[in-house]
Length: 232
Image (cartoon, rainbow, N blue to C red; front, side, top):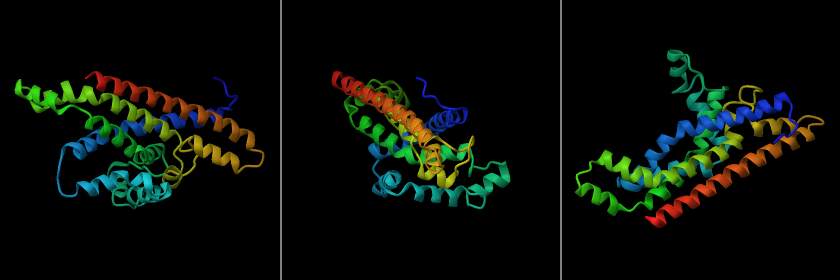
């Protein structure tokens, strides 16, 4: 579909897709691991871990961005060693925008994977164990296939949400055209410019189309997950 966008506007769209994809890539495996721990493990502090995982969903995104700035800034406890020892700087970069987006969308993946994992029939794992399957074999042959629809649904939802992330990105990565100016930031810049209403409208239409497409895909995957579980 052609939206009549200029080269700079398409650049913001492409950057948004890139940042959202990177954020899912960064957070997917840790989110699956955390979901597994929350569902299958019992330990002191589990409730606190659960609350910390959900924290980005309830605090203002600007607070998350500020926290990342304190931690990963060039003088932060994590950012300073990365910059001094490895020459890696995350603040005000595309990678930083992906990190901020990953932190904000992390709870969405955890929640989806957790719901899927909670519906896995433990009897199937027990039967495999009696047949001599070890923990790794049981995970890859039984648990992972049964929870994979939840993983896919969570990843797609997180990707769609990442396309619209604003507060954490602008706080941690700023609004640099071609570097960190994602679609929401480009819309914001257009609304702040005289005569930018048409640009903002075009970009908002692209944002809406991408978001609704991602949500519809996630819903289709979720329905497929319920069908698979029902058949199981």
